[in-house]
Image (cartoon, rainbow, N blue to C red; front, top):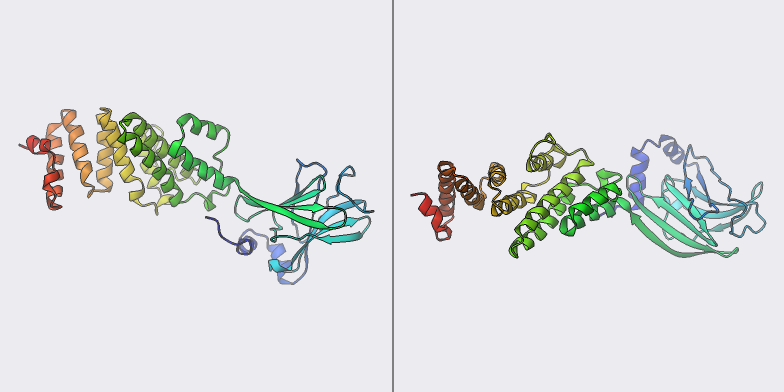
Length: 359
């Protein structure tokens, strides 16, 4: 999903994030110097911050286990002479009053100097960075034997992408209690939501829940199917809420009104009705099967309002109206159903009860 190169992300970061002073230094061709500390404690990362192109140095605690080879402190020093990442160099330096030795890091890829950090873990050094406008990070690990640095590997992480996957997984096979626990534990927190919460993601959440709901319905678990579909819609709405895409519905409105208000909000204007209307229609059918006719009626009417060409919903609505004794209105929709089926040259599929109730 996130294939933008660091070079592209970094260029965008410089142009948009307000780093005008850094940009000015780069355009003038002046070296952009950056240093970060290696801390003695493995659990305490050193946050690398850039300000006006200054050379920032943070000393390592004197109890650190890294070999210093006569230096009083050891730092990571990053130089970058232009906005071209090919000019970036990363060094491990031993310093007293000045640098007395310098060793290059065999980097597997350049780092984003605007957001990076480092940790000392025994004789190993980790350098990590965060991509601009993203929660994605890359950590590179190096070994230091006092003479040379060796590359040991790297790992990528993205807490926001993991949260999106959690939404989809919960919709497919989670429970409402698990959803509530994930909310409480902040497992669904999405940083930089503009880069992660899209119409496609909302559609994936609904699709995942719909697939499981249909499987439940096929084996006679209609109540479970209804619960699954409601959970999926709630998850999709909750995910969209981080972008303030809740729509105009009130908390007192029926659930389906809140779902539709969200899915039809300006922020999700490119979410096609096909992403949620079939699932909503089936949710109404699941309620109908449980004899919850009034709610089913309201949902079926909402579906017809948004997709008047969806033939099965007319039969569903007619049956629920008939079951509640609203036979005049039911005949209106039975007739609409019959007309549409005949127009599709499929009159043989019309259930006998439709013909009988229209007499």
